[in-house]
Image 1: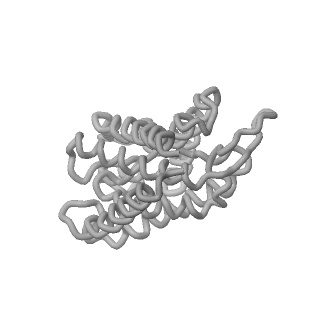
Image 2 (image 1 turned 90 degrees about the vertical axis):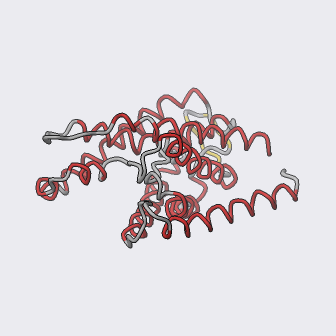
Length: 246
């Protein structure tokens, strides 16, 4: 395991990063959370949504629900690379379907909403301040914290196609720890980009928004690579650092 001094360093680093992060998020100018009490509701709901998804599917797939988690676990040698493509496709498709059903549920409200920026924001993320370098770093860092935390909590065994895979996914977390992890990431680090920290979560709904029969829609594809590539790199880095430490 990690040297105890190094462990203290990492634990304190995470404590201060997230603790100071949440203060900065609600206090600094031009963050998404600035002066908006709705941010607490948004971050809480995303955490609870993760709880439900993991609770329902953990016993069957390990409940990755996120291509960055899948890649991170594979890099850390906790998941078979042969299963990665199928997982990624299923996650993107699931994200597309979820956003589509949400659109149908609120379709009357979408019709009354004329501001396309507001409509797009219900599907995909966008930066509070458009600075591609910093936006990329934010997505990379948030996902790194997510996957790094998951790798130190996960301890399940699960059987797929007759093969037992150790330390597989989120299923053994009993859903709550990972929900809390996503919650604190959103409140502490999400104010710069809306914390996609999940390529499927952003790409699937963004693609669905592009397909909507709305005038003047703009899916902002020039930004879309950031919540895709940033989380992939952050997840892979987390898996690599985990291998070095453990």
